[in-house]
Length: 300
Ligand SMILES: [Zn+2]
View (cartoon, helix red, strand yellow):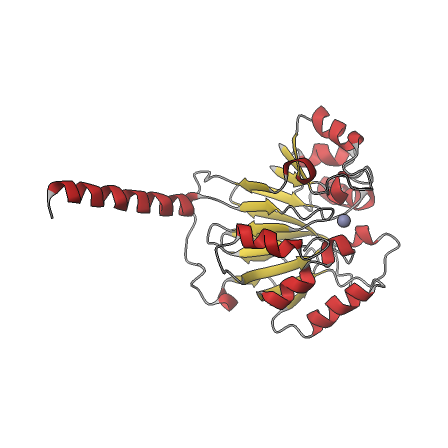
């Protein structure tokens, strides 16, 4: 090997290593997918585990996943349905048909709709663990912890006057960094969470907040936003949606607290990657590990 070739080889190796080091040092990634009026959020752990929270109102989520996931990738470690409304549920039906899904996390709330009934049939026939959300059950996926904050106890078979308030609320934590994912939880749930926070039972603070209910004025009370004290607010809603989401009053509240707001209706897909914060993380779990070992519940 002559010297010039050797240099080229070293440079190529460097680029290769650089790319891989970047992959290793990149933290939790959050993609709020551009699916129109609804929610579909993909979390990617630094070890390349994938967690999909809600599927949006239709099959658009498949196109979005196709663009965010590696080519021909068909594995999702965990799929979550926050609550049974169509703008969160409908896209999960084709996802469950086309993806290898490791486990499901659902609220299990009762709700009368054909689509939900179909989804529950899929859940019943699902070949893997199904978890019903409750605050005691948290998940570890690679180096990311999914702390289920709400519901406090499981909602299986329970019906809700306001199904938004059956939403599963999850705080995803990676090292010191965190994102709080509210589903469509409204101010009643926020008040319950605030009370638990004031009792010191939960930690509401997060760096990034995915606002509840598409930025509607039914959610995001000033007290709640203040407690979360996030730097960024992410809002998932459709361009020109008929609900008037997000409400100006929500944007004003966020601005008053100095939060930077990102919206899918004006900006399309929002991707957030948490940088390495100097902490040390083991890289034992990887996409090459057997999937059943790739995450575990604190409860057995
Ligand atoms: Zn919704």
